[in-house]
Amino acid sequence: MIFIEVELDHPLLREALRGVPEVEVQWVRNTNADGDWELVFWANGEEFERFDAALREDPTVTPVRSIDVGDQRLYQMKIIDRGADTDLYPVLVDVGGIVMSAEVTSEGWLCRFGFPDQDGVDRFFESANGNGVDFDVIRLYDLQDAQAPRDDVLTDAQRETLQMALDTGYFEVPRGATLQELSNELGISDNAVSQRMRRGIKRMLLNAQEIESDRSFPR
Image 1 (cartoon, rainbow, N blue to C red):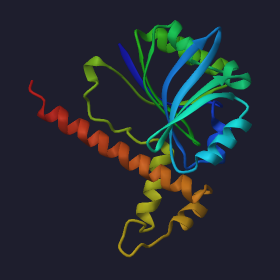
Image 2 (image 1 turned 30 degrees about the horizontal axis):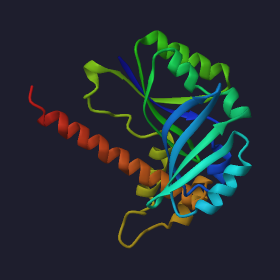
Image 3 (image 1 turned 90 degrees about the vertical axis):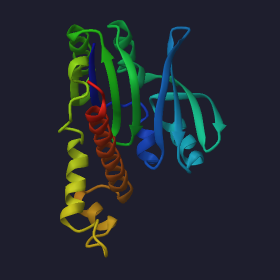
Image 4 (image 1 turned 90 degrees about the horizontal axis):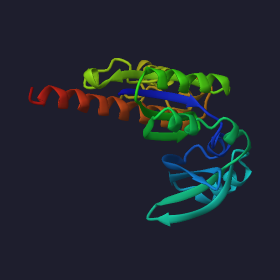
């Protein structure tokens, strides 16, 4: 089986998350309801009222229902219009692929897929190209090298942001640069800068854990 980690610039939920970028979305599943595809996902954050309003204005989904569970909210949405026209999930199912995880932010979809063979990978990305969905493959590997150390753990945007933060002294005490100054340099909101750094640091830590686990695993 072939595993792939990829960032997809997919329109699904894009407008809603750009309107409320502090909300984080975790994919749960896609379901087919009477021929229409629906999206089920968790949302985390403190701006659910704003996010609900943004979802109602998002041209790719129509709200079906939602339920609060603790400090999270579970959403079920019908995928419509541009979201349905560019939906890659039916293609993934058709080639025998699986979604291992998918996180969604205002910057796009960070997905981890599994494919049965190279033909499935090729067909999936041919469909992405045909639907005008830009993508950035972060990692492609098979079972034999799944535990190999990664030198591409960060996306280009995360690497750029963390490098700038390091170079300008953001991590120093006292700080040599503020979040707003980084935001001005990168041309994005300070919230987007904070998200990039947090996600980048998280991914480096997870990668370090994978490497350490691989070293200690009995051969």
